[in-house]
Amino acid sequence: MKEEKDPKDSEPRLAIDQFLEGMDDFFYDMKYEIPWDILDRSKLRERLVRRADQSSEKTLLTMYMVKNKEGKYFRFKGRDGYGETWVSDIKKGRLYSKISPARAIVSFFANTWPKYGIPDLVEMHILKEVVLDESERVNKVIQKKKEEKAKYEMKVKQQEIERAERELETAKKKLENLKNHA
Image (cartoon, rainbow, N blue to C red; front, side, top):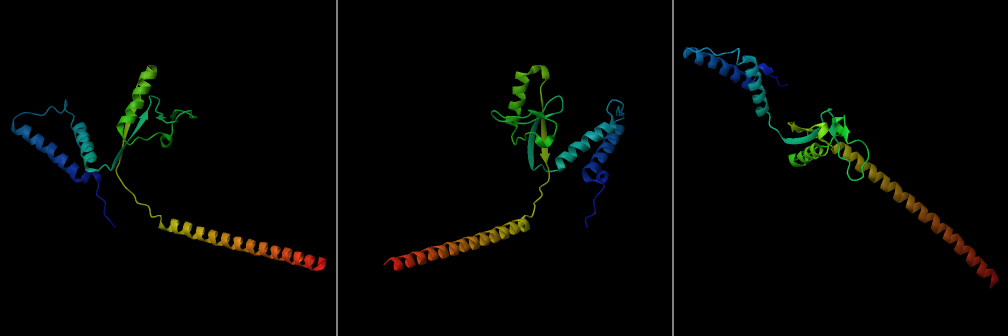
């Protein structure tokens, strides 16, 4: 089992702490005190940590959504579509794989209905890929289809046998009628 590191002890965070300590030493040696009241050390550290965390995680895919000022997401309805254009549920919102179509929607709503404000463009980063093993499910489906096909073929053969028997009975009756009238 993998032992997970505490996020506070991760390499980027330790490097940031060393950088900030080195900054203190550098300015102390220069006989200049850092104005921490102006340059808030905790905010600087937080900003640097956030940037380091973002750069250390590899983004596999970037997706975009359009969000209005009420916090609702744009839902594409298509021509003569029905339902609401703006939905609260993020799962029902429209995802764009490229930024241009999302920007077009933002521009359209900002130009058409300026009194509602300019919608926000939300950028989403997909960081992890999970491969799902579908072999068991697919094998079950294939087996079920084979069984259904075999059942169908058996039913068709049974119907052919019944039809042949009926035709045989009809032919026997015809033959009997012909023998009796001849």
